[in-house]
Image 1 (cartoon, rainbow, N blue to C red):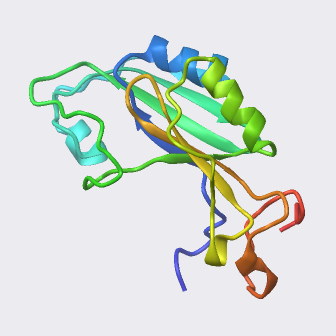
Image 2: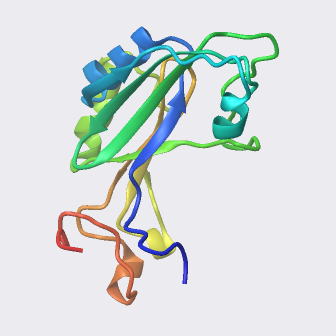
Length: 174
């Protein structure tokens, strides 16, 4: 059961306050590749509400697409600022989220981020129980969005007995 033909994830959409700042962070710090951009999007009818569930007069200044590593794509929006705009939600807020990136070398990646002046939260943390074998660390984008680094080069504990496995270097074909 589920969505017919579902193959997996394609991209994650993010809204940022400053496209130039986001571009620098995504390409120069994270190492994502810029793919292409779309121009301003503005509509005088209800298209924005009907298709994107936003106020019909919101204007998207630009949309850019990035490829990060072995397949994560990001669709990055910069809307014109507007009255009543909210801050970036925290993980504990409704709509809160974070974006996790896999690294083969947690310690080198954490040091790299710190050396680049990125706000790195406490860690890395070694997971326990079903996720034993994994280490993780949160860090912050310049606009306040939370990102996470994860690493489990030998797999996670639950994979020894589970039919479903995560992709990792020890099982690249899965």
